Length: 171
Image (cartoon, rainbow, N blue to C red; front, side, top):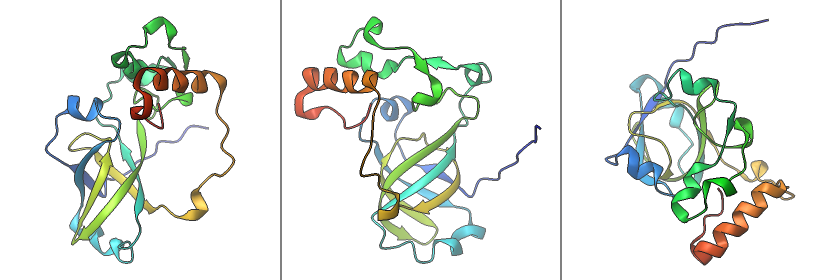
């Protein structure tokens, strides 16, 4: 059964960084999420959480990119890992924006709530990205017994060989 799903943005990501700057950072950029005025009341009680979960729509993904089902984590090339060392895996095993439904899930540090704006760090989204939902990140969402596949562990070890302590926690 196929059904069309329609979602309406509740707000938009705002910052002054270029798309290349956002793509090239492991830690994300600073900026804010500006909620549409009709949703501002929904922020009541969010102040005090250290982090939030933001679900957004990756509006720059082209139709042909939505057909991609296998990818290589290419952003690792800039750290000296050759393309041939990068495994080809299913898109659902990565955070690649090229996917059938280009949705993003970001965990952001919440610095403050100012009216209808959430001032955040660790933004991995382009300026103007539509935000679909926001949820608080709490201890009930942490996973203590996380398991990772061997290809992922090997890539992380390779990054540590190249970058040492500056290697990102995630790839």
